[in-house]
Picture 1 (cartoon, one colour):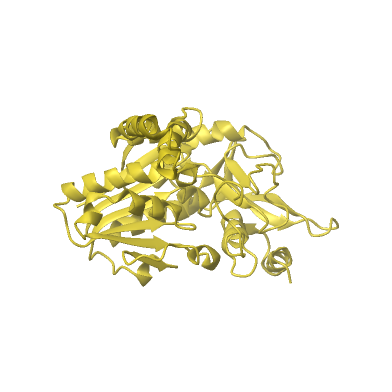
Picture 2 (picture 1 turned 120 degrees about the vertical axis):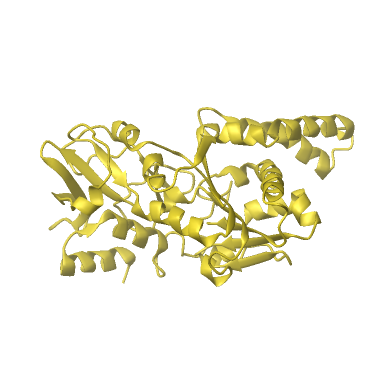
Length: 363
């Protein structure tokens, strides 16, 4: 039975389901979820479905390695120094960090824990004495016993979310239903929203539709509890809830598109998220106020973060190395040359450079 058929049966037995339940099944169902299929959910260039900072090239990881050394020093150079890459995908970021040989690694303190639900992607993690590859963070790190860093690069946008719509009389929840007589096609239906679901949401115009990101908010609290001392760092695209409401526009039609919801498949963003469950990635712009509702973070743009930890210096070093080795044209020279184009993508104010970086200190 296909994933879509199983979801339809679930709806037939219990009625319309929350969007979060539908999204979680589409992405993480053990038998048909986008990220759980062989070769599913891969980031990267030709072989992936979408591109994140680490897949642009090794420069992103080289800058993060500098940030790790700075945080390690701020924490008093603990040994071990545990860095958790939560939502590690195929381990591209970890490879770049290891290749940069940060000071915490040279001192023998660094321990990398790559957390990834997908067995197919865990199989691609680097085999290295400093690396542990796990499906869940609890498999590798007891709660509250370590000093270190938790990094979530484009993870929060991939967490299940619910959808609500403001009306003149209050909030409605939009749930996933099966349309009768049209071959089991999925659609959204409205019903009164529970007070718990909409608690704390800002006032928005009637007809506006926004995500409710309880899973992402809970992740922040869990990550914060997990560390004894350190930093929780999330890099992602997003905006405040009221801004996301404007992106979605206003509509009384549950079938209308949502401007803050994105799909990805083979670098194509045109898939309809309610069609063919498990066939595409489904993400939502992160509601920055919601994920900070319990714990405030130090926030900046990705461009500001990367510049603060030396991306311009690394690019300058690359230009110098290319000038010295252009005649040789070896791999090191080509890597040095690529830093300029990588930086342009990572700092692009209309793209990745505008992403938000949230840093929660844990003391």
